[in-house]
Length: 329
Image (cartoon, rainbow, N blue to C red):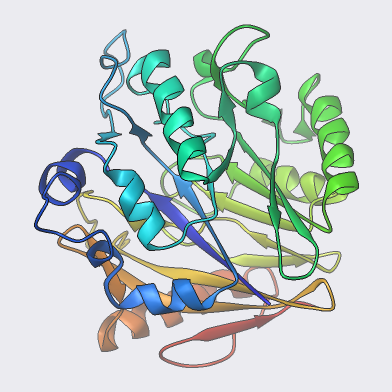
C-alpha cells in the first residue's frame, strides 16, 4: 500500500493568474508527468500553502510580504490528482483573512477533500483528518509554529499553532498534543503529523530535531515536515521516519541557484502489514508553474544532496536516478 506525500503546494499569485484561471489549461496539466505516480498511490496528501477563495483582503497589518490566494477553480486541480487530504496549518492559509478561510474550508468539504490544521475555532483546527485506507485508517494532524497571531481560539478562526524550545513543546501545547495524538490513535491505525515549522532555509535546528523526536514519542508514526523551501534529510528514530522537510512542490517562487528550491521529491510511503516499510523518493522539478519529473543533472543534484543530508542522521538512501529508497526498520 502506498501513501503519496508532497511538500508545499501553492496555487496562488502567478500560478493562479496564468494556470488556475486559464480555462484553456486542463486541471491535470499542472501535475504533468508526475500525475501517474500520484494516481498509482492508494492515497495522496499535500500541504496546501494558500487559501482558495474570492473573498477577503490581504492580511493587515501589511508587514506580511507575500499573500497567496487561488480561485475556486483550484479545487478542480486538486480533484485531477485525486488529492485525499490537505493540511492547512501554515503561514499562508489566512493571507486573506477569516472570511476567505471559511470559504476555503467549505469548498474543500463540498469537494470531499479531507482537511486539518485550520478551522473556524480551535476545536476545528485541532480536528484530525481520518482517511480510509484499503486496509485500516490513516489519521492526520497538522500544526505550525508560524504566525502566532493566527492561533485559533474557542470562537476565533485560525490555525493549530504550537510553540517549542530546545527542550521540545512548551505548555500548554505539549499536553494538548499528547491528548490529541492519543485520541487520533484510537481512531486510526497509522498516525501522521504534518509540521509546518522552522525557517525557509537551512538544516533542522537542535530545537526542531527535539520537536520531531517528541512528536514521535507522543505517538506519531510519521513526522512530515515542510516550510523549508528545500528537501531536508530523513531520520529514522525509534523505528519511525522523520521527514524534516519535503520542500516545495508547486509554486511561482524565485529560484536560488545554489539551494535549488525548484527541486524536490514526490515521497511515496510504502506500508507492509500496517507499518511503514520504506520511503521512495521520486525527483521532481518546478518549471513554468508546473511540477514535472526531474531530468539528468537535476536528478544527480537531488541524489547527491539528499544522500549527504540523510547521512547526517545516519540514514542511508539507496538507488540511483529516477528513484531513491530509504528502508525503515
